[in-house]
Length: 81
Image 1 (cartoon, helix red, strand yellow):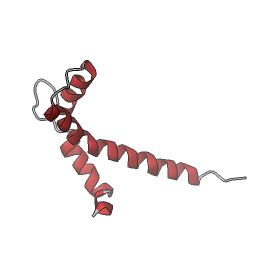
Image 2: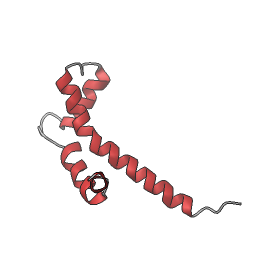
Image 3: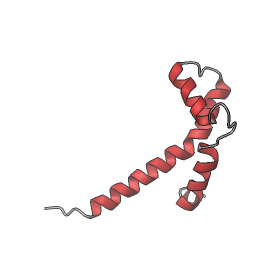
């Protein structure tokens, strides 16, 4: 099950739907609003903290996987002496 979740074919659409959820469209996207609240220090309600984590985890996992795979790709081109 976890191996399927870590597949790009599922993770990319999941990151787009959950992570970049543009709801509501106005005044700003949801994740941007929660990030702005975090930076300004007004992210204090538990539901808002959960909401930020809920929308950010697919993007974080996708970024981690892409960085890991790119690191592996570039390290294969180098030879050890």
